[in-house]
Amino acid sequence: MPKGIHFNNYTEVFGIRGLWDAALISVLRTVIGTAFTVIGTAFLGYAFSRPEYWRRKSWYRFVIITMYFNAGIIPWFVTMKNLGMVNNFWAYVLPSIVAPFFVVLFKTYVEQIPPSLEESAQIDGAGYRIRFFRIILPLSTPILATILLFTSVNQWNSFMDTLFLVRSSKLYTLQFLLYQYLNEVNAVAASLRSSSQGQLIDPSRLLTATSIRMTISIVVVLPILFVYPFLQRYFVKGLMLGAVKG
Image (cartoon, rainbow, N blue to C red; front, top):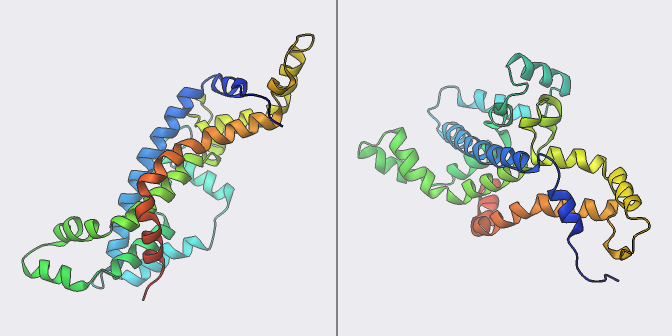
């Protein structure tokens, strides 16, 4: 049974060197990366929904096929290196601008909007830009909120790109830093226990590998929990309407 409350494990985790700099990088990549993905997805999904778009089906299939065939880690790394994305902050942002799954969701959602709305605006002289920003986007709030939530969670939790592409600690993300710390947690917990030997300390307050793991989980999840309530009203509606046509 738990005995009292203490925050020794949080003190230990928040005392990790470079934690706050890594948290800032994670926030920046989440905000900028999510914005780029939502904008890119909306533009591309809208273009694919227009029958008059040049070779629309061919381009759409070209994007969709990337969902089923992965080039692999080595070709991906070589490509990113040739593009100058090693030790580059934009490696967190640019590769995710086109997300095929989100393009499918947005395209399917836009196709459910009555064509008469755009046709009426076109008769009044509105071009693609006016119709997109003043008709399509306001009516697509639910699916945009769904894409925003999925993308922000993915950006916030991602650390594999840091693992393969980043060598400078100045570009470490919070998740990668905690991942490194998590791999060392057994040694850290053992050293903390050994340093406490001979002292009269409540055993319930001793740090263990499990307690540190749970603390790291809470630290990673909390920011998303704060964002989700603001998007919840759109989330289910956007997901269902964007995924089911008919």
